[in-house]
Length: 267
Length: 291
Image 1 (cartoon, rainbow over the protein chains, first blue to last red):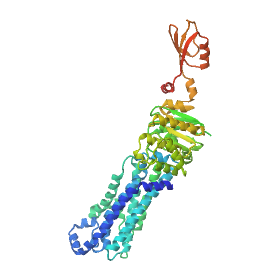
Image 2 (spheres, rainbow over the protein chains, first blue to last red; image 1 turned 135 degrees about the horizontal axis):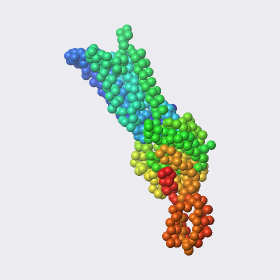
Image 3 (tube, rainbow over the protein chains, first blue to last red; image 1 turned 90 degrees about the vertical axis):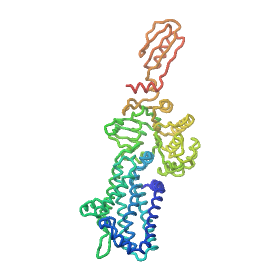
């Protein structure tokens, strides 16, 4: 890894990271801040939601726990919105991390310096994971602060498990996006396909839960594999699925790197 | 050890030819011209030499380093000035040059950077996005020499520079070359090659068609001879003369051969006036290009 390039890459993504960080934090804080209002009318909300078609409630992960505890409320929104937002940020940054220099015409400058392509990729990957960890850590801290501020009781074990799954999803989408972007001409902006990939994965899982006849669609989505597992009445991380998805992400990034090392750089 | 040694270098873009079986040797301390029309393969050769393109065959070495296997060591000793300038628009020239120096692991370039910026009249603190093309080119020139490279690879280096800056640029190259820097100068502006280079290669349709000393290139070529005689004379034209035209006492012919042979022959004629036209590099180039 080259420290100069690593720091430059962080600086180059600073503005984008601050904007996405603000969106994710703002959303997290907003969700938690409205929980007390929902908690006050928990009974009415539960009754109201019970009128929703069962399929729709299942698809969007809404159940009695959504209104009866802050972790249930937070989990519903975390699964739908926050992982999507973080995933879109890191996956779109990942998709552009190698191609952007070519798209902007700066690859010729960078790759005619005394750096191997391997060093360039490693430095950029390191910067990407620094950004991923930063937004993930800041969001987690904000959520903890919000829960302490607005909640009464909290099951921190479930919170922890949920956030491990969130991290795995974000890493998975980032890895896949880096790989897919390596197959696309560098001059093409890959933001649209990244958003499509993440939303598509989410809705595949949602649809598969809504009806038994399309249950098989869930297997195509990483969300399907990251349901918290009930072990002796306690919800826990699905470590097997997590390891599998992280493994896929690592292989995807390795494959993208291998492609980058071998190919011609656009002028 | 040559500064640059290219052996059978070949690059195709799919089925489309880039360069084919290119052989070149540039000695250390030489200013070597690389001449060819647009699309002939000049930039492909340079981009392959710098590791941006993966060759389909052949090899290239810079100062003994194989560019495919040891490209980092090769590029550490090279300064490169590209024909098209694309830099990070949000950076100032100073930030870009500091970033460049950082990637080369060179420290304390501030004084040298300032000196070069003053020489080329470049404001280092303006954002690159706000610079004209000519000023971006100045920034590119400074980055190409800031780390004191042993080999300079220049691809169409003077595009966008006004005549004064071109003059300063050539002066700088002459000073660097006097200190031992090898210069590989790719251009289709033949007067620049003629001015700067001691040797040149001509590339056409991806293949090298000639590698010659500039003086040899010039001397080997046809000369136009126009002479006016004092009186009519019976003479046999020297060997190598052709296209003889006579108009009264005025004669003209084309001559290919040794200049001293021609001068000796002219000395035997009852001359009133004589004009020898040296071909410029343009006509030499066209000659090679049409072969």
